[in-house]
Structure formats: structure tokens, C-alpha cells
Length: 260
Image (cartoon, rainbow, N blue to C red):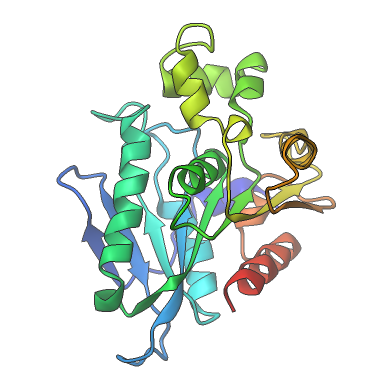
């Protein structure tokens, strides 16, 4: 499939809810059409990609959120400050992810979602943010899915991925800001949540070697993390966030396995 999913307008969300004063601190909530006031639904919190840059927003991720909501799940499409926005980059971007996550949990009853069944999912750079959130919220996040994630920031730096996007995000090289790399890099963090990494074998934007190496290293280094890889043959970077593709069926299956 082409990357036209990035420009195709999604169905509108049910509501937009702010979790902070900045215009980029909000999430779009979608609830199943069959929702009853006393029946809380499992929740997927989705974190969009775009190499942490301001020119990419959450709009395109509305498609996968709508698709999951059609399967009976509540979804929250999370927006956050990015590189190019005031306060974006590290740590502001990650502070927003944590703030949005906690706002959702604290208001779970109000939104009719089940706070005990929450999945964090992120695509590309959003995969890094999702795993990072799981590492820094070990008592809360129980399951996380990375879709073609940039899950090794040291390697992203070495490859100059997307014209040194990780340098822009973290504010320097590993030698210049080593603490930031240790705080932000999923490869260096301990993640207690159940982790499923899905990656297309034909991904030309973020090599599947990112997810392969992550899973192999985690299993070899600690043996204590519950992490597995689902590599999807012939799938590209955007197939994983396009509900029209065959690859999406595997993403949907992984989500439902973790939540239902």
C-alpha cells in the first residue's frame, strides 16, 4: 500500500479532551457505538509517530483508532508537544505522554473505560514513547504494542535516521547528552509490561532489524521481560497503521489478545 493513509481524513472522534493548557496537550476519545453507561470498556491509548516532529500530528492515527473502536474497544488518540513546538523534545514530549496517560486513568470512570484493561500502542517514534512510558510507569502499564518502533535510539543515532531525528528529539548525541539517552532509550530500560513488537519485513523507513535486535537483546540480557516479535512478511512501514491492509489484521489480533 502507499502512504496515502497519512493524508486520508479519518472519521471524527467522539470528543476531544485537553489534559493540559498547551494546544497540543489533548486526546481524541472514541467509544464503541454499543456503549452502555455502566459497562466500562478496555482502552487503547495510541501514540502516533512522525519522528517526534511538529509537522506530523495525530490525524492519520484516527483510522486505526476508529478500526479498534469498531471492535468494541475505547480508544484515546494522544497528541503531545513535538520538536518544533514550544516545550517539545526531551523531556517535554515525554512529560506530555505521561500526563495524558495519567489523566485518562484518573478519569476512567467518567469516560466509561476500564482502568484495569489498558493497552499502550505506538507507531514508529510512538513505539519508542510507548515502551518508554511502560518503563517509567512500571506499576501501571501492563501491556504495550510497538508498531515498527524506533526502539533503539543509539542505533537510530548511528544510522542518522530521518536526518538525525533522534538528535533533534534528545538535544544532542549520546556523548553530549548521555543521561537523556539512558532515560529515553527502550533498549536501555527495563520494561515489566507484556510487550509485542510488530514490524513489517519490507519496512524501508525503520528497518525490521530495530525490533529484531530489541527482542533478541532483551531476551538474552535479562530473560525477565515478557517480549516477543511478530514480523509481518511483505509489509511496509505504513501497512501496520492502515486498516485496509492484510498486515492490519495481525495488529488487530495482537490488540484483542492482550485486552479481551
